[in-house]
Structure formats: structure tokens, C-alpha cells
Image (cartoon, rainbow, N blue to C red; front, top):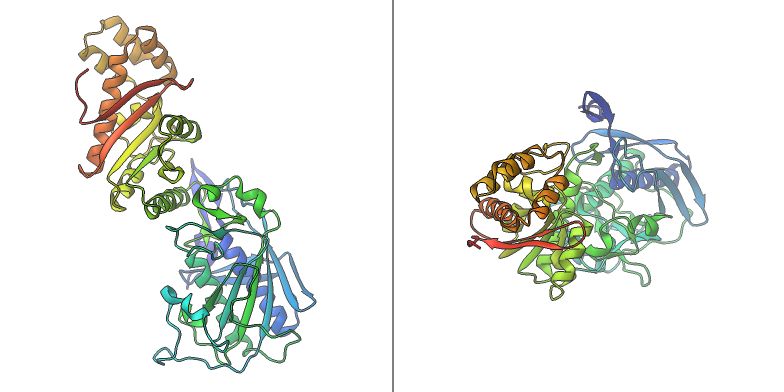
Length: 437
């Protein structure tokens, strides 16, 4: 079996970067530490978390103590060298455990709760089915809109972290021989009023736990509400705090995976809300300008895709949308017109020669075209175009960008593109196929 250290580093520009771990891994580690304290009476300073790929990752535990009826453990999320808003956030688990006389279901037993897709139905039981009651405490978000991988009304703990929690706690119970006499009140798999929660049967991760314990886990993130304001949770309909995320358990520095997941989630919410088309903006400012121009569209229809031009178009196709509207500034539109799948400046150098070619084809003089090709920045080129009142060139470049988008969609989307100046002026509004001016 591979060690975690084999998978914990990446490279960027020749420099070795340290990987971190996800909020899902942090919560899982805190839950394992709390359960071990509950079962053995011993506080721990480090635990090994089994990741989805069966690698064990050592995670430091910053606090582990008994608090009345609960075992409480805290882990500080380490994002490694990735610039993430949850880096250094404290995530705590309050755990209550009861060795209720309950049956351990064999996978073939017809009474066995169904797996992952039916985990919510298994919460409506007579209180004897073993598993984990997962509760959203302070600073943990609650889902309020359809389209996300978690049902509305439940804690915003994504499917993979749920499975990690169940699997790791099942491992811990097997290692310690199950629950002995405990000093805590009875936990129940019945839903309790007040805090949003969901019941997770042990079968969620294919676990068979002898003795059938029922655990109650409340996740708390003290600064979760504040952190969430700097995420897309409010627009996704996740209220009250952060989401507990992760698909691999690790955070790869400067990877595209996290942002692509955010785009996917935003498009899923838009589809679930009945949007037939979406507005793909390259950032907050271009989105605000599009919103002011398209007030009739619901807020869910607006999705920030940053530099992920090709990915967002293909995801829109895959999710069944009929149309897309791009909202962008000149530099991004130039790169889109050249067919670049990803438009970040660090990956794709700005090449203004196609803009000069458009100007030449439209009859602009050679000197002007040379100035365009030699411009240092997109803004300088745009100033030259505006100084010549060359709206025809702006439209031509925008049409090329819209055409590239249509090609990426394999002709399955109606495409419109809005080109804005940085002062908010609408410079071009084109649809594909573009018609001559």
C-alpha cells in the first residue's frame, strides 16, 4: 500500500509544492479522534485517515477532550500551498455514542438499509438501525436549493466526505473491538428537531460493524459563516456556513479540479431551477454587467467560469442547456476567438495578431494594423480600436469567439456573446452564426 507521502507534493515552475487536505479529511480526522477518546478514554494528537484511494494520511489533532456528555476533537485544516479560504480553519466534531442493542446487517440481509442513494430513507426508522446521525452545527452550511449532490434541508457535507466519515469510524470500531460501557446519554438515529441533520447507515460505505452502535456527530466550524461569505455558497443556496468538501481527500496546489467542481455545481443548480440557458461570465464584474443588461433572468442563471472556457461550454451541453451567453472583457474574448480552452494569462500569452488580421480584412490601413499587433496589452489594443471607432473589428473578434464556443458545443447550443469595456460600456452583442453588419 502506498504511503501518504508518496502523494503529498506537486511541482510548479520547478518548485516543489506541498499538498494539503480537504475539509472532508479534516472532519473525518476529528471524528476518529473523538471516537477513540470515547472508546478508550485516551486523547490523541494525531490520527491516520483512510482516503478514498486507501492511502492513509496522518492528520494532527489540535484538541481532544471530554465535554460533559460529548467527546470533542478539533483539527485545523491545512490547505498546503493552495490559496484556499478554508486554510487554517478550525473544524470540530462533538460525538455522542451509545451501544444500543441493535442488529448488524449482513449485505445480503433484506432488512439491511440500502446504500448511498437511499441513505436518507434509512433515517426514518424505529431507532434500532445502526449508523451515524450527522448534524450541522455552527458554521456548517445547509443546502436549500436543488441541483447539488446533497438533498435540500441536509447539512452541506458532500457524498465523499460522508463515506469517508462512515468508513473511518467503522475502521476505528473494528480496531477497538466496538463500543464498551459509555458515560454518555443514548444517541438515536431518529431525526431530532432543531439542527439540520441526516442519518448515515454503516452500509453507506459497505461497512459491517459488529454490535450496531449509533453515533451522533455534530460538526462545528467556529468561523464558518464568515469564511462562507468568501465562497460561492450563497449563490448555490448553501446557507449558514461552509460546505464539507473533497473527492480525493487531498488538496493539490493550484489545480483546476476545485474550480471545475464549483462550475459544475453552479450549472447543476441552474438546471435544477429550470433555467434553459445560462450566462457564463469570466468574473464578478462581467457578471454584474450582464445582470444589469439581463434583469429578466433568475440569479441562478449566472455562473462565473473564470478562465475555463471549454470546460464550461462542454458542461453546459452535458447538462442539457439550450443556450449560453458569454459575458467578458476584450482580453478574454481575444483568447476565446483563438480557440484557447483555458484563458489564464499564466497559461496562454496574449497574441494580438489575429485582431490585427481582422482589422486588415475589414480594410483598415496597414499602419493601424501594425500598431494593433504590437500593442503591449489588450487594454492598449482596445484603446487603439476605440480611438479609431473600429466597432467593426470588435464585432468581428466577438463573432470569432462565439463561433469557437459553438464549435466546442458541437452545434448543440445557441451562443450569444457580450463584450464589455472596463467602464461598463457594451462594445459588442453578437449571436452565432454572426451576420454581417
